[in-house]
Length: 139
Image 1 (cartoon, rainbow, N blue to C red):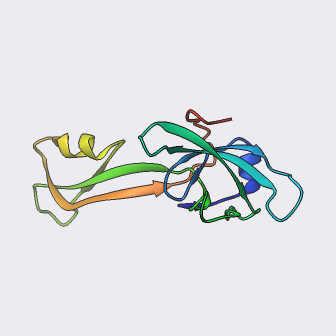
Image 2: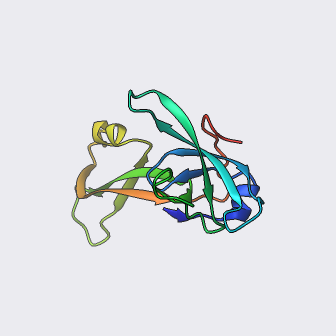
């Protein structure tokens, strides 16, 4: 989770709530202690998608925990990683890592016969300053 950065959001980088809801910032310089006005994509009681207008301070904290129960963060990318080691145990054992866009893709991957699974798997979450992928609510 990357801390909210108003300057990056002004530059077009995607924002979401800390619980993963898409966010579209409508205004970032409103008067008062909570200058950020945003639409947060959530679900109504019947499961229908709906947008809720919320206000946030410059750090991304909501004006009210009742209407907006989570804070703003910069959207990050996730990659799943699976590690392998060569079957031939030598002094220079080669470890190989493969990166995947989903857990399902990672679990289905079959490595070639010269390698075997070793150290397990991991999930990596990162923020890429070149990342400007927009969701339904993106700018």
